Image 1 (tube, rainbow, N blue to C red):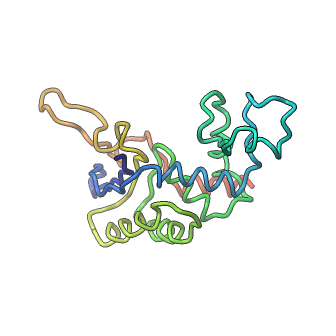
Image 2: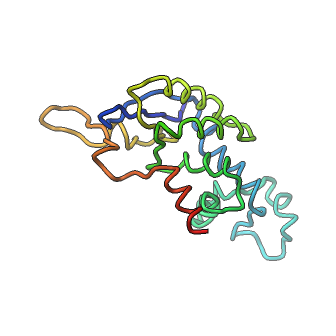
Length: 195
């Protein structure tokens, strides 16, 4: 079964696997679906005939369509992701959404904000389990940051960043030496400054 991977970063900046949280669908996908229902109007796929009223789409399809499974409409999921920059969305929800994005890291000094947001998030997700893992990481003096790989069915970008053929080993991403990441609260605060 798939799982959400949580990675720590040591004082040298190197990524290491911290924990796995079972069933990746309880991670990013669950958060996206909850936020879609909470903040966006019902999704109308392009293949629905014009004669079907918005209020009858679910009855017509015999299921409720979601932007999360709109394979023919690449912009649909972006409507959910753009909620991270929407000042009308609660800060708790924006923090949780940011943690589902690729290349997002959180500095140790911000762990408690993320733990609080994970515990406050309303809906059936794995966030409360993830909060417990972050609480444990907060106790580890060697841990300076955290990052996620939302589903184990793809390659992670943290612990297996590159490969050293001479040593025949994986090289982890280094958050102090490399710059292919962003810090969650820098992004969150940047948006606030622009308001």
